[in-house]
Length: 300
Image (cartoon, rainbow, N blue to C red; front, side, top):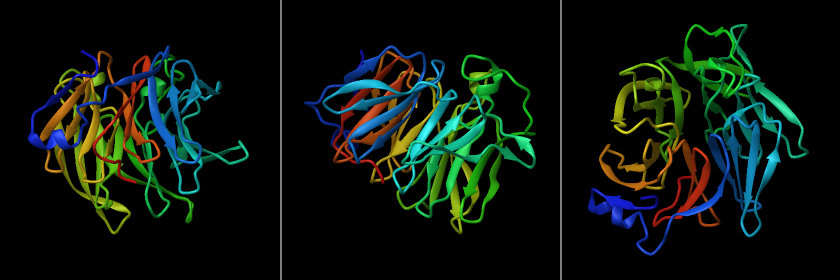
């Protein structure tokens, strides 16, 4: 079953490659998450949250532990200077790893109260950092430390390092999770995975118009995920959304049509584009890291 490509729309045949097979690059994690590719070095980093480590896969060399004490890191991305940006459950903060290996704390509180447990993060072209803050890292000791929630809600934040300001851009989510901008950054997509702890809870991706580059408006449900939830996702150059689900990876057109899916025998948590041509999909799925070359390229 793993690796089977199912097409629901003729457009999907141009996004996949019929001769390419799904590869399992590594296994042995407890909950693999937060993949991010670094072009300089041709390597991938991702989180193994319960095992409190960040893993590294290097083309031609394989896998190794990049950081053992990761503070139960979850989502990762890179900034425009090629530095690692991480969401940490244990410390309830967003950090940046400098080129010399030192750690800079970018955000750990809002209105004088600790964040819940930052989950996923993206960097906009203007250098601002946008991240989600559900409570998953404080609900139990499995992915962080069971703790009291101090924030009144689970927000989506915008961090402007130039002005040293942290602002709420969305406050009406149950459990905001994955997020990504459209290629032209006119739309921000954010998933809500409230179904994880609430029967009949939200399991959809919402779309927002990005107003003046720094605020959100016109909220609407982009698509409902019928098998599980959309934990993490990325967009290709044509604005198609490639999202994790309970049964693999699904691909949606910009207007919300399900084009096809890649079936995987593990629950998929997240994914990212990478490789020298940015046409390789890296997939974190429960215990394993997979990859698949595509007929399209990831949005930068």
